[in-house]
Length: 199
Image (cartoon, rainbow, N blue to C red):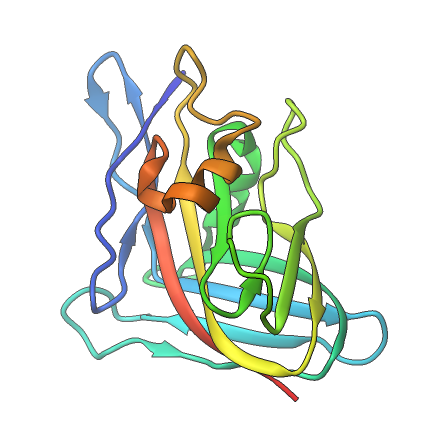
């Protein structure tokens, strides 16, 4: 089964269309992402979560976006995607994980020092802690070193279809670093801005 990239416009009301499959020209109903959860688990102590949530979907109330508030230290970051328009909530993360070779999470913004940014200083230093079957990063699990400061963390879920030559390659993250998210192939499934404070 081939996976087709479905273009996503990040709506102000926060409902995201995720990936659908293309089977001989007939497209299945699109998944919906209403919720993005960041979970920062320290080496000791309780985890910190920050959530983007638009549970009533497009046309409803404005979404809520939690700030990211951390203390300095080392964290394991996990990212979760859900559709909360259904009960129980649908775990879109499972689809991203299963199709890891055609998905890539990117962490950019003024708060991030990492492989997809040109920043030399920022409160969050990010590195990938997972990989797909080709050894390329996915980003559902990441290493974070937090130091005092503030900034903006932009989390982008990018769909990278397996074309020839492959859209997702060893240079993809570096291409984002030099040209931004829109400079690479594929399309954006979700993009959320979180404010970050580490103190």
